Image 1: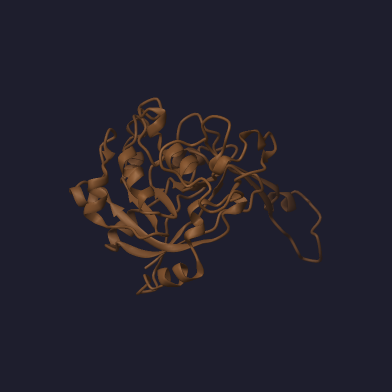
Image 2: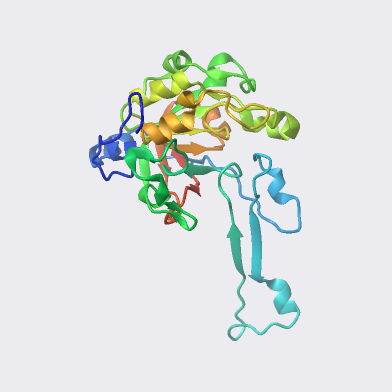
Length: 302
């Protein structure tokens, strides 16, 4: 059973969506008022897949994770070699993309992604996570997310290009930027992805992120989701692990105890340059039944 304040049972004993339940039609309609210019920005990293080139490794990722793979079942070379067209003058290219989202591309974590003990969020049995997928709290329960996004540009506030690897954002710094409302998506910029182009070794030396205090502060404000441009929302050390004790682990605090979905590895540089704190946040994960997460291409409508 989850300890300390949590959302278990708050949305009913069978709930598998957590604080996304706060996105009622009225809240969504109110969020749409945050768009004033109609400019649309993508907040996603590119997915570069290949089987015989270094392309996937040119996008920020965590070491040791399987990188995207892109296969073509039929392409222009096949027709040049004499493949029969599917109709008179009609040719087609067909491909398949394999992406393991966690740690390799912009993605959303499902509520079944991490847990402690024998229960997922809301007391669902962890034994229902099987080799073929999770039969409870999978990513397919998310649906579409349309909410007011609130950008917490922490390096911008501190006058930095990016936060240092060891920095853990305190709640007070978030409070200086904005006070989120129930149902908002908190979007936190650390600036860490820009380090990738300068030095992959530096990028892998650790990562800045939210402190447990900041996570509890966002949970207390009833945010619908937390999104960040780093790889784990919380900070990472040089081994790619969190230094916090289990009670303060951000994934357990937000996903497991509060049912707050996490979005990781965003690209937020253009959004920060636009100078907007409020915007419309739009995202829809793939309906992967039993998925622990999904690649995501979130949008900011300014």
